Image (tube, rainbow, N blue to C red):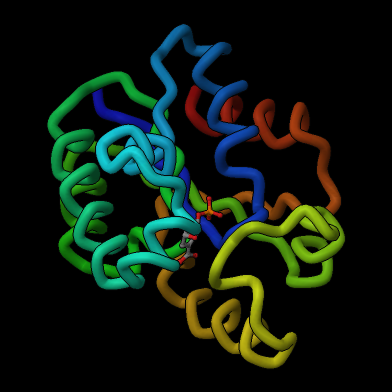
Amino acid sequence: MRNIVLIGFMGTGKSTVGKRLAQSLAWDFVDTDYEIGEVTSMSVSEIFRRHGETRFRSEESIVVTRLSQQERLVIATGGGTVLNPANWNALAQNGIVIALHASLEAILARIGHKNDRPLLKGPRDVIEKLWSDRQACYAQADYIVDTSKKSIDEVVREILAWLE
Ligand code: S3P
């Protein structure tokens, strides 16, 4: 059985939805950012601050390669993970790719002031460009759920219904 891979911009709910989905399927849940933290003993923001994004992306690819070789995992990726075609290919070869979509307004409202994501700290126009530049990539998923106006339960139910 292949993995289920959740992709999408920061704040679209990949980790929250992924945990619930994994529970419903009785599969294991993994989060690439969490795995990177375990391997490096640093938080994502610490890696960015101390070593830069390039180091983070290389740790991310190592984690993706390892997880892609496993089965029956619900994998929540980071927002930039699948921008690297090698990561996309590895994940898609052994997984169904589901994109969680949300408008930038919904994302910023959800994240509020509790924002420790390095790439969401810039000015609004820079974040908006990042969001819009990435949409074409996320749109290649096998299935897309618009989470902007849905509860976590509704999103999980929609994915489960599509998987049936
Ligand atoms: C990133 C998203 C983050 C994390 C890192 C980079 C991105 O994950 O991997 O800060 O490039 O969009 P989340 O999408 O879980 O916030």
